[in-house]
Image (tube, rainbow, N blue to C red):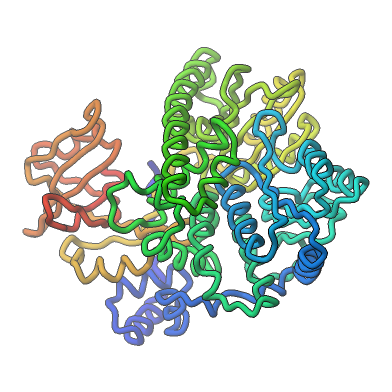
Length: 561
């Protein structure tokens, strides 16, 4: 691991903020690192307000989208809500379809089959709409590059509204409205919404004509918070407000589908991390292993018994998904060794039998072993399909753009993308991708980084300090949980390896008569560094540990040296 200590902000700004907020200098410095320098900025950060959400009509084409939907509802047209099969797509479809059903009974939902149709808007979906007399399709979390598909729909008398957050290509589809804050001609103030976030802005705009307030839309925010967490968008600005209130809904009054999924989880209060690791994989499992509509059905179900039945089915899909991604990861690692590709700048692996539903997860798993931009390919019809994942600070989307001559189709973000190519292009693409990444990646990015906010002493880790730190949540990109460093630590003498294969490290660290429990996941191999009262330094975050009814603070070790 590469430890990087963040630069300390200007001392006078820290001092001024500490006095204005009546907090200690560590808290003030953490805030300044996050761009918060005034009392008003701190108030917005610690007390997110629904009033801070932007006017949805600032988004280009929002007026056109609202007008077309209202016209369709007035004329009793059939409307189809269409979305991608991942968490962001299925939550988007659940959100918009359930809202539109309060205005019309003529609402259908559609999720493309991952295997038969692939990502995004499909000809099969448009044909289904045409066969069922649907005259308006609202596409969520996809569509920004569906130029030919939208033209095809138009030829069949079907209008399109696109709600997307992916980067547009050189041309925008000829739809009635294209809502995407990343459009160059869109002046919307916040650019980092997920697909479900764009869908929420649409229902926020529709709510105006229904004489509804933002408070009336609160029940939909459990879906938005889940999509924000799962899609790894920055939890800053508007996303912070949406995630903050969405978590409140999840913990206080979640929809029936969430209650069903959480019925087996014994946790008092869910954080955004819990949403990412407990709720999101279950929603995702439906589209990965079976069909995304199973997730939409669960998320929109209003009968608890039915929802519990759906949730138990999805639990089985999730178990299958875990087994499948483990076995494919083993095969992919063996392929890397067999091809003697351990020292390359990229990982590109392929097997025609790998399950398309889990290749994105496998790509992330491979990065845990070989920290470098990674693509996992499988056979998809007559072509090869891949999921791409990247390492921190490296834009894999740009790298794929540089390989466009070998690619049929691609789309995505800086850190995650999907693509298809012809089988005879695989080897030339693999070679070109390695060349592009080798030439463009900063060599230090090949080692995972621990970004440390600041050095502190153990006597500063107090319950009061932690109470304030908790208010920095929800954590995520753009606002990660603070990471601290302390030097000159010793183990009290009872440190040991725990867990399966003794993979994890459990100990109690002490310095200057202060001792605090610590847990280091996947740090079991470093036990020798703390034995025999050797001094070491640790990078860690702070968390609560509940055991036998007692709650204490503990250090969650990131690394020790």
